[in-house]
Image (tube, rainbow, N blue to C red):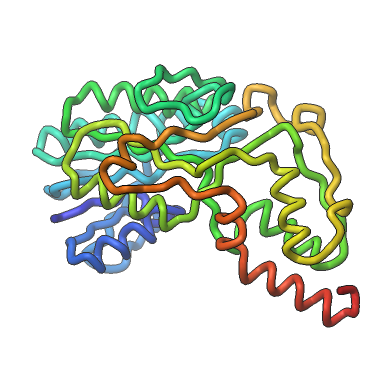
Length: 297
């Protein structure tokens, strides 16, 4: 198939483009770089007027403005990037006979219950969640050519708060972590496999890809401390809202039910500590080696 990946510079678009190419699909990817390299790269910024798009079999909209705080502080830009531009793109693509897959988020739900099913009504509390819920609804109105794939939190090595904690614990420092704010971790490979399955199924529907359970940031940090070999009391529990998190962005739960994807592919949601162990294996080893080298382990 001829596939358009909107947002090749982001977390998902690059790995997805490579995976589709390895499977023999033709891939055209968009980039925010002003001078795209190669015929298979198109300049596209969702915050700007959109260009004409090539004819493709399927398009995956990976690009988004996903930071909760940025969406709250710059709502007009966030609405353009997360709702208006994807809708404009999808209208153009579906009129030309293309299928569209929108990557979305568990933040379209209020976080009060775990393992939310695909057919449950969105109930977002954060600005980001509201924008993505509206984008889902308006794109799905375009018909069966549109699918939505909601994700829980995707972890990548070398990035984010947990990587910073591993480094700090390896240097003998203490960390502070929320004990009332939870996430449901996934590996990038789980997301890529799910997107490819939805592409190849040609089924217009809402799908979920999720970890198996929610874990607090405090429990995740303690797990990392144990894996490194330092005392758990180096991790201090703190409450999220008391330490700067907007109450609308507090997530007691973020896990999703994956019935439709599991029926399609046999997907089994991974357990959270298995994901942490696999994603951060090299960083944990590096932290251990540093402690041994300095005689603190």
